[in-house]
Image 1 (cartoon, rainbow, N blue to C red):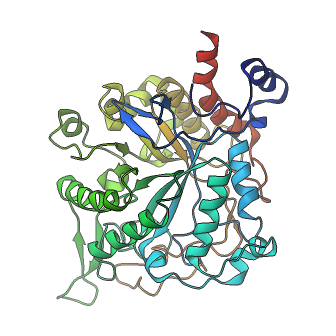
Image 2 (cartoon, rainbow, N blue to C red):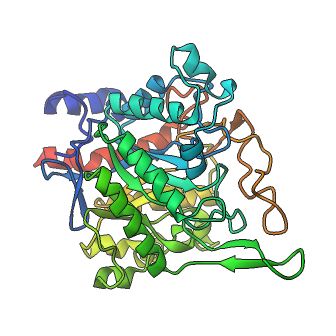
Length: 424
């Protein structure tokens, strides 16, 4: 059975609860870790297929240094809400800077958590609180190195496009990962490591030339794969059970499918999951007029064929749309197409962007490291404290879904295979 079966429910009670209460009344069962890989499937400790049904919880990577929402709600309530909605994992971003420097937090950022008795003083305290609450709720954690510098992501001028920069070289990136892998070694539900979010070219100030000159720094897939393997081996040396997740270059939109399928470009480590990202703006501008078969063909070409060929698992690490209803909008067309695609590609895991309903992370100012001419205010500024996030899964109190219809769409994906198995 899949890992998203309602806890402690027999089959008749499970089906009755779906019929009478809706799937939102069910909690995700804990993942049976460690997770492994079998062809295009992620499997649990018993060898059963697992569909990773995740949601992103941003914040620890940013200037405030804490998972967002802790100014409104305590970690336990947020984690239990995630589980109750049916998700079996959370993708939890962090920055190299915040892990290695562990800055003291502004008390406003974690006000609700501290009022509930949580002792949170620094960024790592906040990360620990989130990880512990998720684990207690039976929700798996996929750690994600989102940034090197603390700040908002992502564009071509934020100087965080690669896994290294002047302030945080590759050695610091590996050091941060080893620190976290060791820190959570005794927390089995911290099951995976997404080594770098959206690798891409970056523009930095030229060493010579006019004051306004920039140079483009980029790395091909082969160089990124080699760095991934170096870091992956360092992680496995201290935490051998970690599932490793690799994203594509170019904002993780298009994986080198032919090289991966043939093996010539595949990561040369075991238990690896490939992770593209996909948003409406990465698809044709006429998305509202695009037929579903055309949409399916585009996604299969960009990354889906890796799974359909049975080669390696795919986790759609980021996708999403506004949780505010916008009928006939580009977001609505994209969402409908993506829900059908994921329903048909049952081997593909997913991670919605994002859980957060408010931006409690980032003061809305340009970070100190981000300077003209190669960076502007959009390059890592974050969201002002408390700013509304219309893409957030959760409502303003972090106690339930902001958009019940969209939550049900996701739950249909989570429970569909389970119901099909029960019907046999």
